[in-house]
Amino acid sequence: MATDFILKGMTFITIPIFTRLLTVEEYGIVSLYNTFVSVFAIITGLDLNASIGTGVKDFREKKKEFLSSTLFLSLISFLIQFLIIILFKNQISSLFNIRKNILILAVISGYLSVIFQFYFYIKIFEKDYKKRSLVGLIYALLKVGLSIWLLLKIENNKYMGRIYGDLISNLLLSSILFLIITLKGKKLIWPKAWKYSLLIGVPLILHNLSGIVLNQFDRLVIQKIIGSEKVGLYSYAYTLGMIPLIILGATKLAWGPWFYDKMYEGMRNDINIKSKYYNEIYVIILSIIFIVTPELGLIMAPHKYNISLILIPIIVASYYMQFLYTIFSIFAFFYKKTGLISIGTVLAGIINIVLNILLIPKYGYEMAAITTLISYFFLLFFHALNVRYNLKDKTISAKYIFGWAFLIIVLGISQYLIAKYFGMFSFIERLSRIVIFGVLGIVVGIKLYKKLEHHLNK
Image (cartoon, rainbow, N blue to C red; front, top):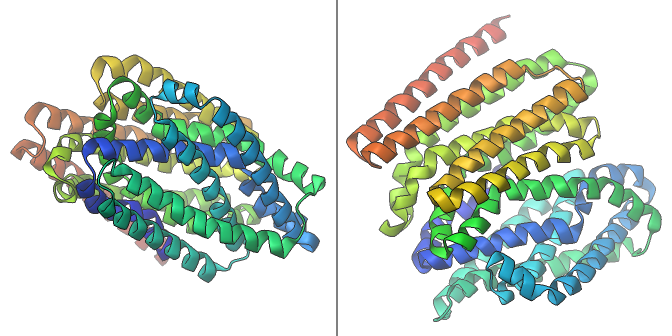
């Protein structure tokens, strides 16, 4: 868990470096590049890594062959899609207002990250955490080190140093990992394994793409309508506010296996109780993040980035919606109904697209944060409906979850409006931030302590 925390936090840790080596506009271009990398990682790889968890068990006698053939299938998918994108690069470039060379590099890097993640998934299910951690740390350090070196060497279009640093480190490690997996399996073409992987992975493509839309479509609209500089400001605020997401990524590694064990044992009441503890611990951490993150933003980047810090309360509230959504979405994975996951995420993605297109041109890039918060609330709502009425599972109290969702939304928007009216970092803004979220954290902490004390004394 500690290594995952470090890996997911690398983006956050390097903020002070890259915001000083890049202009706001260049920071926006890199952010847009990363958005396309995320999109192409899903499309080119067909989400086949989702089949690893069950595949290594169902093909246990030929596990290595299953893995090598599935990875080779992803390569075929990439090559076909790469040719199509090359043919239509002018149209795609014009549609999203992105440079053609960055588009092509994003496609390549997107697929290379598929290989990297494929290896990661294998190590998770083999429970070989040491190798996974070692490779992850090497990749993170290589990418950051190479990017900084290139940024210092390149004089014009310095953002290319960041992009080349990502691409080259990806190419070096992913090529080695591809060879390791395929040479161990020694089987590249296996229709039975391909069919198995496609049936699991393909239904999740829409879900994961919609997740990208929810998280990053706003950047595409800002880039298209306003420009790279506003993308840079918006991306800085979002990267700075991502601490809850880093914590979620680390805690899911513990919550997921525990949840599966309890579901198989039929201990649903225990899940309901512990999910409340899980949430309340998260809220306490969130309260600290609400208070501290804007102040942290003052020292993490040059002064020209500070204008975007007003968005932090909205962004943190959005990440909290993501956290609550995962409490429901894991049920669909448990019941192996992954197709149903996509429906809720697609609907939330459509809401995000419509709101961004309608509101960003009229109200500016700040509105993108609010539309994202609204969309993530609907993501939570749709997945809660799926669990309650489609999967017919009432383990989690929807009333409890949505009570917390509404509270954090109201507090987040209220703090944003206070900052908007009185000025960010004004005496009133700082006082309200400390009082509102300080009281929230203290009250929740006291109640949680009493509940845990009562539980332990039973």
